Image 1 (spheres, rainbow, N blue to C red):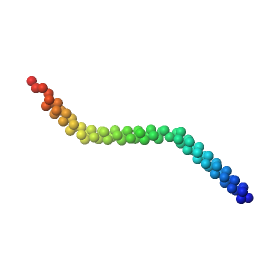
Image 2: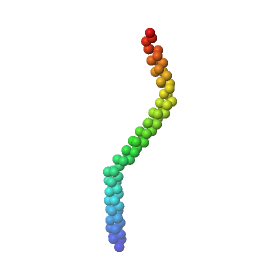
Image 3: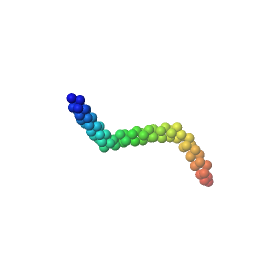
Image 4: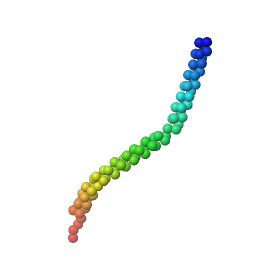
Length: 76
């Protein structure tokens, strides 16, 4: 009786290991979508940061460039 249970448990263990291996293989084959989502979220965050920096520093930088252009413009 005990021998039957141990072979039964071994068979169940083998099936569980095979199923786990199949699930892992499927996840490896179909994992590219997650990376795409992560890259798009990083890109969106980067765009928001750049927009924030430009909106805060835009007038200052624009004023500096305008001043330099006016100072170096040849007067007649």
